[in-house]
Image (cartoon, rainbow, N blue to C red; front, side):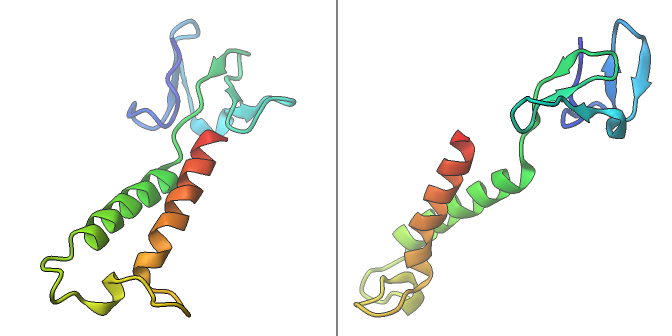
Length: 108
């Protein structure tokens, strides 16, 4: 059983067959594999970890969606929470592009 360094295993990978701890910096990329594929020094593969920055951007994007879609009363809305009339952009106009970026990176 191999644990990826991104798992909460104390910051190191554990190989049950070797019975020893290997620091994460000893993990190397396998030539010819796709991005995120790693190999243990003894040749076994580790599953790719999550991209924490992408998770954070996903969370901020969802929080932004909730903010711009529920501004309180629609009679008195803070102007940046409305779409731009024609020229320019506001905070609200940036949410959907960020969402599409997160979806695109997640699919790759």
